[in-house]
Image 1 (cartoon, rainbow, N blue to C red):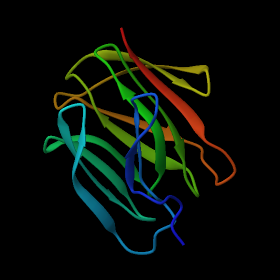
Image 2 (cartoon, rainbow, N blue to C red):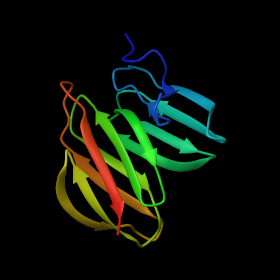
Image 3 (tube, rainbow, N blue to C red):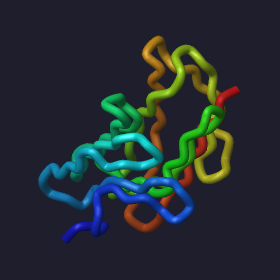
Length: 137
């Protein structure tokens, strides 16, 4: 049984939610329109991946469910839920420093690589969502 009715959806607050870590087989949705952009999500228990206009945005291993993803020039924030601890990769600006908050706790600063990738590890379980905030310094 699927965790959510839709693999990607727009929330009332203008953010998007996507992913389903409970799926046994890979599912995808392409050409989801939000604020003039086209999103594509692929998800199942092994991996969840989000692309915007053909470019990488988010990936988690194993798969996760993300709610209220909000991306601005200065900050990326979202809530994430999964069946086990996950490694999350975000595409941000190359060689920039970011402050990471998980459930309101400052877990430190990280710098993106030349490709703009930032990797965060989170402790997850099916019981509750974890809030993640990534703020550009």
